[in-house]
Length: 237
Image (cartoon, rainbow, N blue to C red; front, side):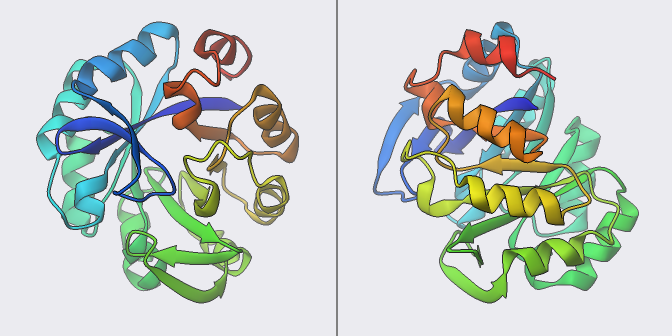
């Protein structure tokens, strides 16, 4: 399993939010490109870059994303507000290794099928989960479907992976939802990327034991709850 630092963008800055709430911003750093370079300088080979403003239709950090793709030596997966195949094409042409799609991918399976066929192995589907139900539109809409049902449908597509976030734990350093991730890893034929609540090396080891391929970590790295150097030593492959 590998650990992927999160670089979340808001107002041109690198931030960390508690529970995904714009009213609970705990971390704000002025230079996201420098932050990304610091993570790669420590040995992380992959980054998770998300445009929070685009995801919630509050704005756009596309110029910052472009700068990270241009100036940071890492494999980058980019998400946040990606709703068209034209956006996917643009991001991959600019250097994104993978593109993360969420709301439209979940709500319009025919569009996702076409996009996955056009960009095989380059799309990661984000399934944000609260109490095992998928939430969309910046976590504001809860769907009736259980996440495992969604995962089973995704198995048919040529995806690069699925990113499952336990949103009720996001940014709270409350520990990972091991039982959720274990069930998702068992149900998915694609690599599973876990996110939400990761706070300790024990959390990461639990995820690795569950069969998770990667973990996106934000708050724990930014607040030094996790020692980045120790994480790199243990979770780089």
